[in-house]
Amino acid sequence: MMKIFCQQKIALIIIYSIISINKIIAVKKESHKKISIINNPHKVAMLTESPIKCLGYECYRWPYYLSLPLMWLLTFYVMNKKKAYKLLGLSGPKTNTLFFDGLGKSCRKVKDYAASWKAMDIIYNHPFKMNLSVGGILDEFYWRSQNCQALRNRYKLVKHLLKNTTPKFGKEIRLASLACGGGQAILETIAEFKSEGIIIKAILIDINGEALKRAEKTAEKYGIKDQIETFKADLSKENSVLKDFKPQIVEMLGFLDYVEDNQAISFLKNINDSLDEKGVIITCNINPNPEQYFIKWVINWPMVYRKPSQLIDIAKSANFKDCKIILEPLKIHGLLVAKK
Image (cartoon, rainbow, N blue to C red; front, side):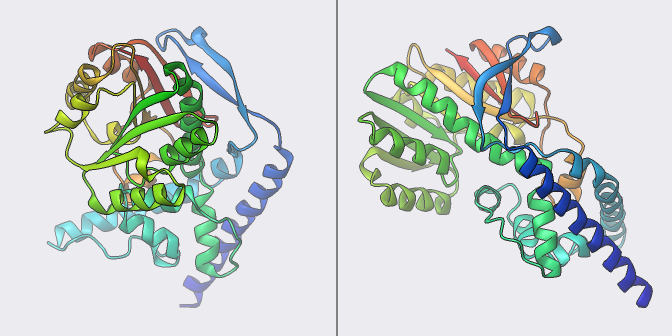
């Protein structure tokens, strides 16, 4: 028992040290973060730096490179634990590991809500207030990980792209957000444009009714309830709402992370058919990265990882043109911008 206690204490000291190093680096890196654009993913020379810069992007790599052996060790442990449960004919373990969902309260919530809008809401809006309890230290450690940083970067980057793209369509714009979840990025952007006299009419579509209720409450909070409509629908089976609306911009984050290539191409073809004549799609896919197996096994969050070249090939197969990938600073999430 004493040995286990000492091991836990050492692990927590290591985690706390990594968080402290992360904070020191964060202070020193108060400079503009650069965004990479890929116009032709089959040619490395086509990777260029964009003028898109923002102090708000996160790019703290080294503390989490140092912690990778610990994350891989936990991943290996959980993989074998789940295999043992399966051999014994048991359902998956209630707690994957003490050092994630065992002690971390937010960690446990994200694992329970994995792949849902609720998990995204926790990651997007993490308060970053240091809690010196054991669970608080673990929560801080994981919610500053590269994948969590990259998700928050993606959220900020899509808002920037919407702000650059939307004015090209005039004073009243039709926008569709697919698999919208709580719709935070879209609704914040619509509210900001309203303050500038630009009206965006939007439809928000998701299969989860609870997520749509959250979106409606957020729209009411920002005073834009009259500019949005929500629809509970599975767009892989039914897309008449989208065709009737004929959007000029389609925003879809996350959906392609959960479907294989053939389904992704078919789905994007339906979107292409529904778009206005000069319409634009903004979507994304997660890239392979060193934390992906930890996410799959420890957080119970499996995804389909694609390189930028694979995502552009899928978009072109769906008849999209002028495809380019914009990578957030950590290069874990690539946002595809393409024209009909």
